[in-house]
Image 1 (cartoon, rainbow, N blue to C red):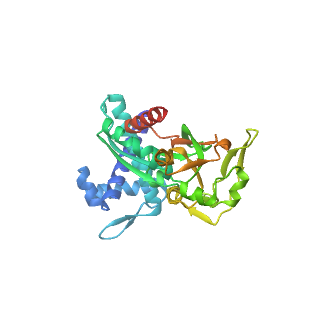
Image 2: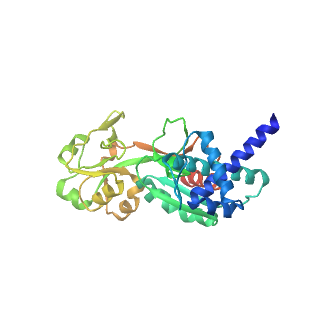
Image 3: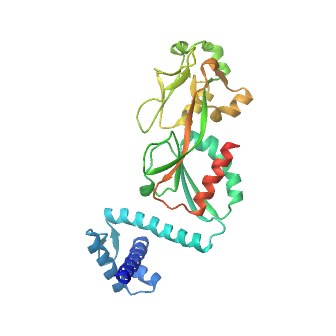
Length: 307
C-alpha cells in the first residue's frame, strides 16, 4: 500500500511538471521536447490530471493549447508548490549556501519610497545573486494571483492565512511650508485646522479618508475628522508632493518628510498634540515554505529598521 501511494505521488508530481511546462510554452510538443517525452505522453498525462481534478485545464486547438481560468489558477499554485519543493531539497542538501533567484515584493507607496528603497543598495550589495522586483502600491494584493513573495503594509492584519511581523511604529506629524504658514498662520490647536487647507488622503482599499491622529490636552488618543476640498486618491506620494508645493497642511510620517524638515522646506505644527504613530508590518502567506532569499530579506529588513 505504501509503495502504491508513493508511485501515485510520483506520477502526480510528474504530471504537474508536464502541465507546468505546457502552460509555460503554450504547446504540448514544446513541453515534450524540454522534458524528453513524446507529445502524446504529455497529452495523456495532462488528460489524466484533468480527469482527477474534474476540470479542464487547457482549451485545445489544432495549433496550440491555452489555459482555462481554472488552469491559470492551478498553474500559479503548482509553480509555487514546485518552487517550495526545490527550496526544501536545497535546504536539506545544503545546495543553496548563497540566497539567489527572484524576489517579488509589494510595498505601500510612502513606506516603499522613503523607507525601503533607501535600504535596498545595502541589501543588493549583500546578496548580488538575488533578483529584486518591487511593486509600489497601496492596494491590497493577492499573493497567489499576483505572485508576490511578501508584502509590507500599514497595520497588523488579523488574517490567519498570513504571517505578520511588525517592523516599526512610524511617528506622525502635521507639516506645511513656511510660505503657506506665513499666508494662513500657524494653527495653535486642533480645532484651528478647520480654518486651514488640509490635504486628505483617500485610501484605495476603503474609499475613505485616512483620519488624522492626535493626543488631546489630557494625553488621550483622538482622531480628527478632516473636511477638505483638497483630496488625493490612491497615492500618498501625491499628497506629500502637494504639501511640499505649499498646497496646505498634511499629516504624514516623519520619515516621509525628514529631508525637507532638515532643509527647512517644511515646518511641523501642532507638535504639542503629536506623539501618535501607525505600525508597519511585513507579511507573507502562513502555509508557504520560506526560501533562503525571502528569509534573507526578512532578517535584513528587521535588522535595518531597528538600527
